[in-house]
Length: 225
Image (cartoon, rainbow, N blue to C red; front, side, top):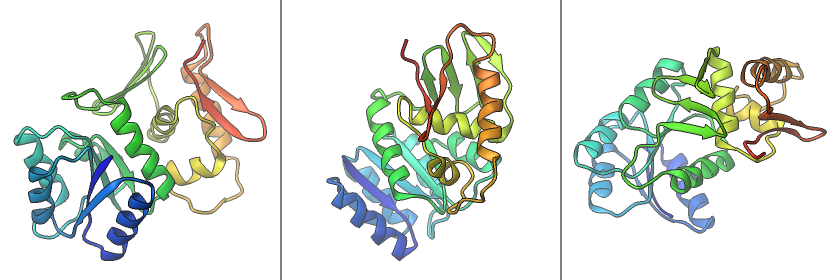
């Protein structure tokens, strides 16, 4: 992949450029919105990582300018703003994914790879699909076999994370970092409770379960028959 990272925090920018380069990707960096927009418009990038709070031109304005110019490369938004409304605003502005700081580098890399792998050219990546289960990132509507499923915000985030890691074992640590933004284990059953509630909503009443427990490892969402 050819990646552009637009991030004003120098330490974070250097960390991402170094990590992505060491992962085998050609990576450029920009420290403010104006420089980042110029590079994005002039360069042929496969995916962008854009911080939301940028000097000179904020991240959402950068994305909106790119979309107005006809640029369709996927954009992963980085932000310390993690409320539901913040995420929705980012997606409405033209972002394709949203990752809250602090983040795990492994998750960021996996999300970038998923964006470039699953996105069809010219089509905004605004929905996820596993089997007959569909999740719309803009409207935040979930359906299975055409039936609407009502989820609480945390359940929605949990399902989104699992769908982005379809057919992969998702560990407790991954869920704590990716859904709860915990970088430590609080030693509670919060994950088990939410997974159980989510399973009840997306699997109960349907012929084939999608959400599976992998004993001793974690969970897996799979659309395979």
